[in-house]
Length: 459
Image (cartoon, rainbow, N blue to C red; front, side, top):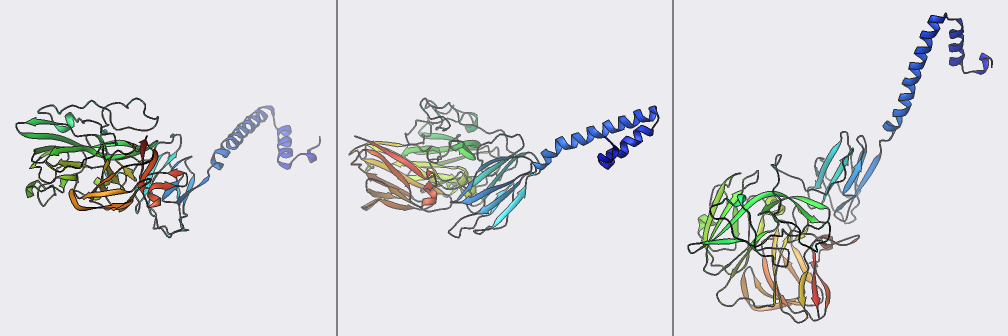
């Protein structure tokens, strides 16, 4: 083949090799081979650079879709607000966006490998994670306002037999009493399972005083299958254990702060000495990290109440709340079944007793049994109209006070801080919904979510 048929660079190279002396020709061939290897390597690695991709996360129905995204470093992610009702969102966490009205977008390029957590600042129950590089998808985590945490304190005990895979039940422990003289965080214990996703607080009697111990700590808490939140807990669970005492009991609660931020505990609805009310800088000093504080009062306010931190709604939203029930000497609410539901809407998401459907605990009942449910609005932000399917219910008490004239409804607005006692008798067997009737709090495009549980009525 003549040189005129070859591409010009190769024809010139052939002529140069023909005219060169043997030693020079060898050097030239070595250079050509090295250049070929370099060009081949560039060709091999070029596709990797060309693999950078664009991804879209839709913001719709008060959720990020997908809420867990795996990609490669160098990829670009575009958030698109697809709400149709005028709702504005704003992304915070590892990314910061401007306010995003419907139709607006926000784009970020993921430069380095790692896991990136984000949430909506207007609706903090909306969370998501982006895994870049070889990281496998991890559950959604709520953003943490704390500095780098110490090792988390997980709930004690192992899952109970028969629990569905992927669902984290309430800690399964044998009811016991605190070890005398031990600090709350040295020996956090729980009492009996109440069949609704809550547990009683264990106590010991010292003299004539019932002594409870509460350890405030940070825990990875599975809200629903595969969705894990960075929660703040009392004794390792959300909500904290239910403190149940009798009217006239002398109560002592020893609280240890194992968090990385200061706090205090308020006994909501209690009539007690001002110094025991639990408001930092007003009735007491802050409980600083590592410190222990003791509250002591007599149970005078009967009925359904609750306790919670009083250091910003964010702490309550992460789980620092629990039921506080005072049984009256006379006139208690009579029923065959007694349940408590604490309604949360903070960074743990929309929860009944710390869980989102389908992880919420079903409530067992039989036809014609009298069922008593205590509703507690833990919040920290929203009002929730709670609706029962299949039967109306009587509202018999509000904020711990029995009503002189109970009234019958099938939907009841529960505000932040409010408690209600409702009673009903199911007439038909089946799985009857109890849920918040704000649809974005209890339903999604794939079915029921969030503030939903089942009253499982048998014949």
